Image (tube, rainbow, N blue to C red; front, side):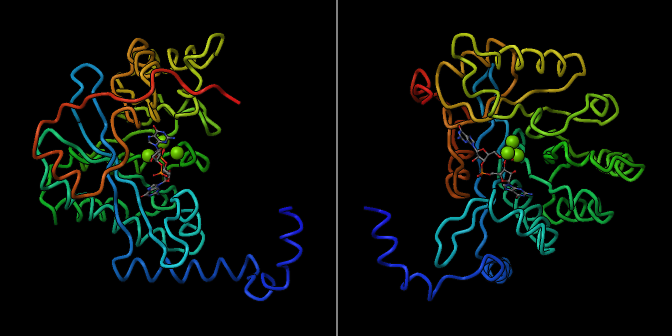
Length: 289
Ligand code: C2E
Ligand code: MG
Ligand code: MG
Ligand code: MG
């Protein structure tokens, strides 16, 4: 029936059907518009210490409510921003906004900001970070930059110099989505990360009998421990997953089991009160279909 409907409506669709390239150009235009007219937002997902169950920080996550298309995932529009040169101004806006919001939160709370490999490759990044911190008057140690393994693809003297410059500012560095890229363990030895974020792909399914992900998480944790780095388990959704990652020694947890990303106002409210979180969610994962 769907097929019939599709055929019947074909001449309607054809009229406003844009080519991929056209749709892309339109999105680039809309994104530029959003950036300059306040259409972008940051939401903040709590990062919780496994021992105390207190919020130690928030990860800032970009949100764009497109006027016609509704909420678009950053997984969709960040790559577009990277392609059309908008990631530099959007990334700078995110750093400044996150530092500004951070300035209203208690000293014990940090903010983590995702940094695109393109920003990381730009020698102006340390200056942008310094300015964002100074404008908001926050301690650099309260800002964590999340970087993915792809920054090592063009491993060079420039990469090393960028790490040195960022550490000199005093910000923290986290390695995001660990284990999902073309990783080499070699860079862990020289790159000064404070934290490894274990990708939710490893958390998902880890509690199922016979699943090997728990062995992988255990190995990542012992590697991080040996190198003096913290670990955040990402995407923890069930009580079983929470108990597992805690038993495996992850120092922090981020996931729907504690909280979804919050609006700025919700984050303000949260930090004005008790920082302790209560896990709540399903016990076990839904069966994998
Ligand atoms: P990420 O940095 O790995 O962020 C974690 C993603 O996992 C977020 O998706 C978050 O909403 C989602 N998540 C958290 N807990 C759970 C859970 O329990 N279950 C599930 N299923 N998902 C969970 P989001 O916000 O859609 O962001 C996707 C990606 O977009 C981010 O992955 C990051 O790579 C990128 N991104 C987001 N904001 C920015 C930004 O400001 N700059 C850059 N360069 N990239 C960003
Ligand atoms: Mg991240
Ligand atoms: Mg991640
Ligand atoms: Mg990711």
